Length: 305
Image (cartoon, rainbow, N blue to C red; front, side, top):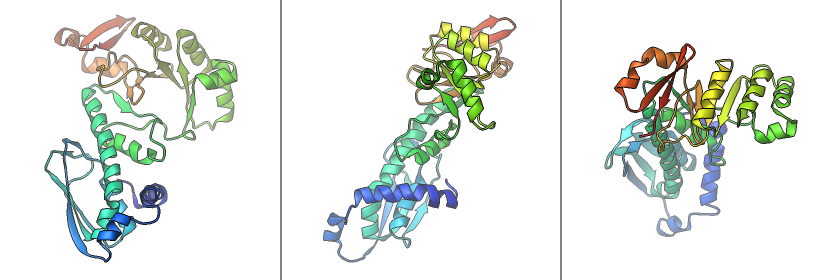
């Protein structure tokens, strides 16, 4: 999980805020039936199969209420769990256990859900060399927890926030007066260690981004046909991402580039790596792939169904 410094400085304020949201003055229900401290013990039992994530955050909720609570974990983040499995045991003042229960479970359930879903997509990509990443589309005040859950599920983090890197989207480009203008302005302003990424919706924007020297080009909601043209034009002069309508449900209809992004996740891929691993023979062995040759390079297409 998080190191102690990250937990105290960055995570604790959000956890405390969540507790304050749930207990604005007092836990009137618990205080009415438990006016005095009484020692008790509870078990954390899995109710649905999946990947567990957020156990340290779960425990931290109770520790912030009462630092004398004893918590024993029987599984760790990233473990696959099944219904009925005991995941943890808590011992302490029953008032602490009752007051922190809902907030602790909210964190654990949400983080486990994200890790489980991410892992399901990551497993589809296993062995392909494709890297799965997330976006900034997180629940407000939960980014530190949700980004962590993506990593536990087998994904990787894209930029953490607006200070992390330059991503020129349609509105930025419009405000700057065009792709080239936006890239040049970003190069002039941003520190040299920051990569500059451009969202491109058509081939003209791709060409402008390449000419301006963008480091990463996001192909946004392009058809497979247009995307192939864009990839051929870029020809490894920039990293490539694909964004839009790439989900677990549509089975990633194509993986053809250096990087591929969906509304929730991102995929990174290298032509040469996949050709070195699979080659043209995969076309004859699997109905889920088709291989095309463009110049001296193969393009592998992942088909739906």
